[in-house]
Image 1 (tube, one colour):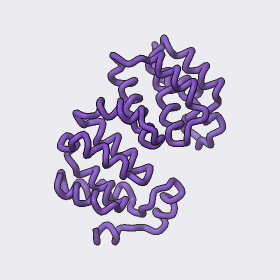
Image 2 (cartoon, rainbow, N blue to C red):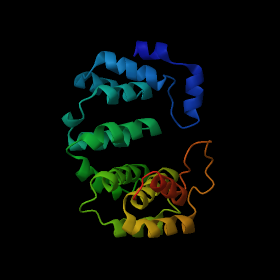
Image 3 (cartoon, helix red, strand yellow):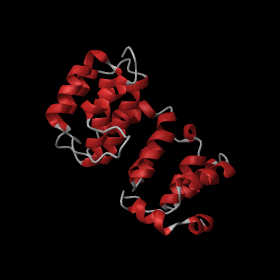
Image 4 (cartoon, rainbow, N blue to C red):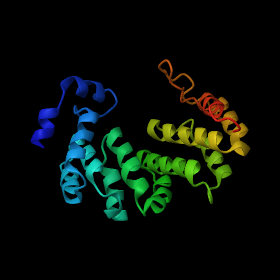
Length: 214
Protein backbone atom coordinates (compact mmCIF):
# COMPACT_ATOMS: atom_id res chain seq x y z
CA UNK A 1 0.00 0.00 0.00
CA UNK A 2 2.92 2.33 0.72
CA UNK A 3 4.36 1.60 -2.70
CA UNK A 4 1.03 2.32 -4.38
CA UNK A 5 0.73 5.58 -2.46
CA UNK A 6 4.21 6.60 -3.64
CA UNK A 7 3.22 5.88 -7.26
CA UNK A 8 0.18 8.15 -7.11
CA UNK A 9 0.42 10.93 -9.71
CA UNK A 10 -1.81 13.95 -8.93
CA UNK A 11 -2.23 14.79 -12.61
CA UNK A 12 -3.27 11.24 -13.45
CA UNK A 13 -5.68 11.31 -10.51
CA UNK A 14 -7.22 14.53 -11.82
CA UNK A 15 -7.81 12.94 -15.24
CA UNK A 16 -9.18 9.73 -13.74
CA UNK A 17 -11.56 11.57 -11.44
CA UNK A 18 -13.29 13.05 -14.47
CA UNK A 19 -14.33 9.48 -15.30
CA UNK A 20 -15.34 8.60 -11.75
CA UNK A 21 -12.11 6.77 -10.87
CA UNK A 22 -10.45 7.91 -7.64
CA UNK A 23 -6.85 6.80 -8.18
CA UNK A 24 -3.70 8.34 -9.60
CA UNK A 25 -1.53 5.35 -10.47
CA UNK A 26 -0.91 4.98 -14.20
CA UNK A 27 -2.33 1.72 -15.50
CA UNK A 28 0.95 0.83 -17.20
CA UNK A 29 2.72 1.19 -13.85
CA UNK A 30 0.10 -1.04 -12.21
CA UNK A 31 0.60 -3.69 -14.88
CA UNK A 32 4.39 -3.57 -14.40
CA UNK A 33 3.91 -4.00 -10.65
CA UNK A 34 1.58 -6.93 -11.25
CA UNK A 35 4.13 -8.55 -13.56
CA UNK A 36 6.71 -8.33 -10.78
CA UNK A 37 4.36 -9.76 -8.15
CA UNK A 38 2.99 -12.53 -10.39
CA UNK A 39 -0.14 -14.45 -9.34
CA UNK A 40 -0.80 -14.24 -5.59
CA UNK A 41 -4.38 -15.10 -4.69
CA UNK A 42 -4.14 -14.39 -0.96
CA UNK A 43 -2.43 -11.03 -1.53
CA UNK A 44 -5.12 -10.22 -4.11
CA UNK A 45 -7.83 -10.83 -1.50
CA UNK A 46 -6.00 -8.64 1.03
CA UNK A 47 -5.58 -5.83 -1.50
CA UNK A 48 -9.27 -6.01 -2.42
CA UNK A 49 -10.24 -5.78 1.24
CA UNK A 50 -8.58 -2.35 1.54
CA UNK A 51 -11.32 -0.79 -0.64
CA UNK A 52 -8.60 1.36 -2.26
CA UNK A 53 -9.15 1.68 -6.02
CA UNK A 54 -5.52 1.26 -7.09
CA UNK A 55 -5.14 -1.70 -4.73
CA UNK A 56 -8.26 -3.33 -6.14
CA UNK A 57 -7.05 -2.87 -9.71
CA UNK A 58 -3.77 -4.51 -8.73
CA UNK A 59 -5.68 -7.31 -6.99
CA UNK A 60 -7.55 -8.01 -10.22
CA UNK A 61 -4.25 -8.26 -12.10
CA UNK A 62 -2.60 -10.74 -9.71
CA UNK A 63 -5.57 -12.89 -8.69
CA UNK A 64 -6.51 -16.37 -9.89
CA UNK A 65 -9.99 -15.85 -11.44
CA UNK A 66 -11.11 -19.47 -11.13
CA UNK A 67 -10.34 -19.49 -7.40
CA UNK A 68 -13.29 -17.23 -6.51
CA UNK A 69 -16.63 -18.69 -5.47
CA UNK A 70 -19.84 -17.47 -7.09
CA UNK A 71 -21.06 -15.54 -4.05
CA UNK A 72 -17.63 -14.00 -3.56
CA UNK A 73 -17.66 -12.60 -7.11
CA UNK A 74 -21.20 -11.30 -6.60
CA UNK A 75 -20.15 -9.47 -3.45
CA UNK A 76 -17.04 -8.07 -5.13
CA UNK A 77 -19.05 -6.65 -8.02
CA UNK A 78 -21.45 -4.94 -5.64
CA UNK A 79 -18.49 -3.51 -3.73
CA UNK A 80 -16.77 -2.21 -6.87
CA UNK A 81 -17.27 1.53 -6.39
CA UNK A 82 -15.59 2.91 -9.50
CA UNK A 83 -16.10 2.26 -13.23
CA UNK A 84 -12.54 1.00 -13.85
CA UNK A 85 -12.66 -1.53 -11.01
CA UNK A 86 -16.11 -2.67 -12.15
CA UNK A 87 -15.03 -3.06 -15.78
CA UNK A 88 -11.74 -4.80 -14.99
CA UNK A 89 -13.45 -7.18 -12.56
CA UNK A 90 -15.96 -8.26 -15.19
CA UNK A 91 -13.45 -8.40 -18.06
CA UNK A 92 -10.47 -9.95 -16.31
CA UNK A 93 -12.01 -12.09 -13.59
CA UNK A 94 -15.70 -12.91 -14.01
CA UNK A 95 -15.43 -13.75 -17.72
CA UNK A 96 -12.80 -16.38 -16.85
CA UNK A 97 -14.78 -17.83 -13.97
CA UNK A 98 -16.75 -21.09 -14.14
CA UNK A 99 -19.59 -19.09 -12.55
CA UNK A 100 -19.78 -16.51 -15.35
CA UNK A 101 -22.97 -17.80 -16.98
CA UNK A 102 -24.85 -18.11 -13.69
CA UNK A 103 -23.78 -14.59 -12.74
CA UNK A 104 -24.68 -13.26 -16.21
CA UNK A 105 -28.26 -14.41 -15.79
CA UNK A 106 -28.56 -13.19 -12.20
CA UNK A 107 -26.98 -9.80 -12.81
CA UNK A 108 -28.94 -9.09 -16.00
CA UNK A 109 -32.16 -9.27 -13.96
CA UNK A 110 -30.83 -7.26 -10.99
CA UNK A 111 -32.67 -4.13 -9.90
CA UNK A 112 -29.38 -2.23 -9.48
CA UNK A 113 -28.58 -0.77 -12.93
CA UNK A 114 -24.82 -0.92 -12.33
CA UNK A 115 -25.04 -4.61 -11.44
CA UNK A 116 -27.34 -5.16 -14.44
CA UNK A 117 -24.76 -3.50 -16.68
CA UNK A 118 -22.30 -6.25 -15.72
CA UNK A 119 -24.84 -8.85 -16.82
CA UNK A 120 -25.17 -7.08 -20.17
CA UNK A 121 -21.39 -6.93 -20.54
CA UNK A 122 -21.23 -10.70 -20.09
CA UNK A 123 -24.09 -11.10 -22.56
CA UNK A 124 -22.20 -9.01 -25.12
CA UNK A 125 -19.23 -11.34 -24.71
CA UNK A 126 -21.46 -14.32 -25.46
CA UNK A 127 -23.03 -12.56 -28.46
CA UNK A 128 -19.56 -12.27 -29.95
CA UNK A 129 -17.96 -15.56 -28.91
CA UNK A 130 -20.61 -18.08 -27.83
CA UNK A 131 -24.04 -17.08 -29.16
CA UNK A 132 -25.47 -20.61 -29.15
CA UNK A 133 -28.51 -20.70 -26.91
CA UNK A 134 -28.95 -16.92 -26.73
CA UNK A 135 -32.30 -15.44 -27.76
CA UNK A 136 -30.98 -12.61 -29.92
CA UNK A 137 -34.48 -11.53 -30.93
CA UNK A 138 -35.47 -11.36 -27.28
CA UNK A 139 -32.36 -9.32 -26.44
CA UNK A 140 -33.24 -6.85 -29.18
CA UNK A 141 -36.80 -6.65 -27.83
CA UNK A 142 -35.48 -5.67 -24.38
CA UNK A 143 -32.98 -3.18 -25.81
CA UNK A 144 -35.67 -1.59 -27.97
CA UNK A 145 -38.02 -1.21 -25.00
CA UNK A 146 -35.59 -0.16 -22.28
CA UNK A 147 -32.32 1.29 -23.59
CA UNK A 148 -33.43 4.87 -24.25
CA UNK A 149 -34.44 5.51 -20.64
CA UNK A 150 -31.84 3.32 -18.92
CA UNK A 151 -29.30 4.91 -16.51
CA UNK A 152 -25.95 5.77 -18.10
CA UNK A 153 -23.89 2.68 -17.20
CA UNK A 154 -26.70 0.29 -18.10
CA UNK A 155 -27.51 2.22 -21.28
CA UNK A 156 -23.87 2.04 -22.39
CA UNK A 157 -23.77 -1.75 -21.81
CA UNK A 158 -27.04 -2.33 -23.65
CA UNK A 159 -25.86 -0.20 -26.55
CA UNK A 160 -22.66 -2.25 -26.77
CA UNK A 161 -24.75 -5.41 -26.92
CA UNK A 162 -26.94 -3.89 -29.64
CA UNK A 163 -23.90 -3.01 -31.71
CA UNK A 164 -22.34 -6.45 -31.20
CA UNK A 165 -25.50 -8.20 -32.37
CA UNK A 166 -25.49 -6.05 -35.51
CA UNK A 167 -21.80 -6.64 -36.13
CA UNK A 168 -21.71 -10.38 -35.55
CA UNK A 169 -25.12 -11.57 -36.78
CA UNK A 170 -26.09 -10.53 -40.30
CA UNK A 171 -29.64 -11.85 -39.91
CA UNK A 172 -30.30 -9.36 -37.10
CA UNK A 173 -28.24 -6.50 -38.52
CA UNK A 174 -31.01 -4.51 -40.18
CA UNK A 175 -33.14 -4.54 -37.03
CA UNK A 176 -30.18 -3.60 -34.81
CA UNK A 177 -29.40 -0.62 -37.06
CA UNK A 178 -33.06 0.39 -37.13
CA UNK A 179 -33.29 0.31 -33.32
CA UNK A 180 -30.17 2.42 -33.06
CA UNK A 181 -31.43 4.95 -35.56
CA UNK A 182 -34.82 5.32 -33.87
CA UNK A 183 -33.56 5.50 -30.28
CA UNK A 184 -30.58 7.77 -31.16
CA UNK A 185 -28.70 6.66 -28.02
CA UNK A 186 -25.15 8.14 -28.02
CA UNK A 187 -25.76 9.69 -31.44
CA UNK A 188 -24.09 12.91 -30.38
CA UNK A 189 -21.39 11.34 -28.21
CA UNK A 190 -18.12 13.28 -28.67
CA UNK A 191 -15.75 10.99 -30.56
CA UNK A 192 -12.05 11.83 -31.07
CA UNK A 193 -10.63 11.76 -34.61
CA UNK A 194 -9.71 8.27 -35.87
CA UNK A 195 -12.02 6.66 -33.30
CA UNK A 196 -15.31 4.90 -34.06
CA UNK A 197 -18.49 6.47 -32.71
CA UNK A 198 -20.39 4.43 -30.10
CA UNK A 199 -23.63 5.31 -31.93
CA UNK A 200 -24.73 1.80 -32.88
CA UNK A 201 -25.56 2.33 -36.60
CA UNK A 202 -22.18 3.98 -37.21
CA UNK A 203 -20.34 1.44 -35.06
CA UNK A 204 -21.98 -1.50 -36.84
CA UNK A 205 -21.32 -0.10 -40.31
CA UNK A 206 -17.66 0.60 -39.57
CA UNK A 207 -16.91 -2.79 -38.05
CA UNK A 208 -18.72 -4.65 -40.84
CA UNK A 209 -16.79 -2.60 -43.40
CA UNK A 210 -13.57 -3.89 -41.88
CA UNK A 211 -14.71 -7.50 -42.21
CA UNK A 212 -14.99 -8.49 -45.89
CA UNK A 213 -17.79 -10.89 -46.53
CA UNK A 214 -19.71 -9.94 -43.36
